[in-house]
Image (tube, rainbow, N blue to C red; front, side, top):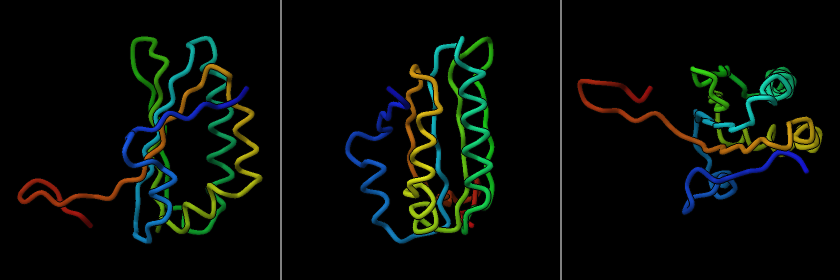
Length: 124
């Protein structure tokens, strides 16, 4: 067994998002893990992040952990385009790294773009 994937949106899967050619995009990925496996998740995520950081189109990433002993982590990564993310994410070497995650890990990755809301936030 290895990393399990649970779609964030049942109607629009990550795989279907990969056919869009837009950018920049933000990957939001939540990880749920047994609290006793948190250190193993951190090690696996750090190795993934170091690898993805070397890929064309990678801009930045940040990992957060739920407070009060939570086993929920949230990662966001900014990519220049869906194409850049798709190329990095689809790399067989990267896919093989999923085996490093603890068996209790459930990931929910999804791609987003900024939204402009007048007077509150901008889209660029």
